[in-house]
Length: 374
Ligand code: 13P
Ligand code: SF4
Image (cartoon, rainbow, N blue to C red; front, side, top):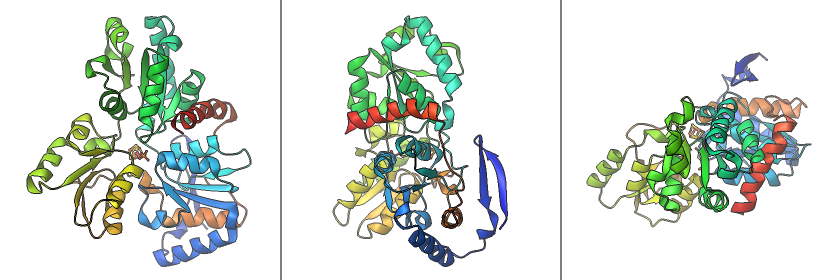
């Protein structure tokens, strides 16, 4: 077997090159055999954005929130996470010390999570201390789970919590009830949508904080006035949807229902009929009447799966261009097969192990989320 090592997103990554020639049928069979041999020692978790050829092997599939709950409850010795890096980190943070978390491809990162690094966050906090006197008394840090373990640890240590797209509303309410301001990172769109559309906080009470500029690009007075500081991060997949695409669908098909993920811009969420996490999108469309038509603003693998699972409905992407999460797509059946066959031989490949000091503080932020959001 040829194994190549690569440096990606700061971690050693190994990949089996010689699984590349195998057919899907062969891979399916070998994955099934390896799963059967590992039995209850293994659980495979799969995010809804994974390709069909991967997600069909998952024991449990879900959105970021559902999978973090599944990871915490998992009894298995090995958790193979078919998703992206921050999700596997969360599973490791929430899991038991004797569990091993594997991300089949360590280059499966998240461009949004990469938009907030811990050094920047520490500098921003120092600036807030300087302007507000005591940042910790004034500002509640809230991090979307799409963030690094180090960012989660910082948030946990400073009294804040994580959120996901399905529980951002109760978490933001909780933050608002405890401190006069909040710093929401890294997704400005989820933060803006939740604060504005769900809590009614006026847009002129929000600032977009550019971590590359002194004071985020604002005056100290403007920062003192603001209630919500939105980190200048976004999802490169969901940022591609446009209000004009929705208008075009409505002109062509006035009966169409539009449902989008809250990582889309406020212009898009304002035009949509329904807004929610991937689990919410799936549930809403599965329960919709036969014959209904839906334009969906989220990742294309999920949109295509919704159409296959609901042949009695018409389901299209909001965008005329395929909005693919290319990092999610890096997990392929070849690598899944490779990590499982290695596990059968007692070898752990591509483990995600968050250092203990970071893990303990990051767990605070994740556990707070699970307590507040149920
Ligand atoms: P959810 O899983 O919370 O719907 O979020 C989608 C996403 O972009 C995950 O990275
Ligand atoms: Fe990150 Fe966006 Fe991909 Fe989700 S869809 S993993 S937020 S880049």
